[in-house]
Figure 1: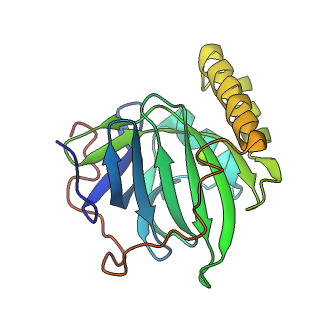
Figure 2: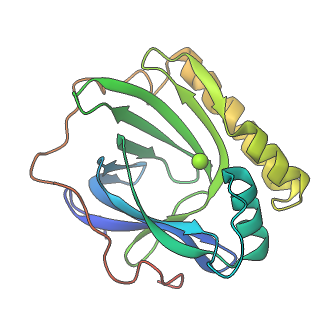
Length: 211
Ligand SMILES: [Mg+2]
């Protein structure tokens, strides 16, 4: 059953049968070939953190590698800071995020490499695969977390097939970005969220990986 615009769903990231991170998303559009979600600034999400019984590495990449390898993360709240529209197609190994500044000006593009989305009883599930591409509104792009992705690949945390799939997907999306193909060439500048949506909140069950 399709969701309606304004519904709040849960996006779960799952790593080795545990919820790695979770956030609420507002449904904008739920069509067979594309899903759109709104993630406004101010949304509180759950992110993984080093458990209190051991020392935190103090640096993001080392922390993430430790947590992915050990599987002992705890969750802490984190307030999201840039309003984003998520553009997802079934089967893609990435999401495209169009983002806006608080002034309403376009901030840019973010291509998040991730496992293909699966629908759950409370929303959607995928897993961030660390590599990202960022771009300005006029599509000047650069890598983000490329070194982190390479370290994760070198440590064998992601298998070679997955690493190759992510690199190939990134190259394909960059090609579309440079060519201004959809979704990049569509008119997002005039898109605005429904003011009635407000800031979504996580519902119970966000920490259950089996929903
Ligand atoms: Mg990412």
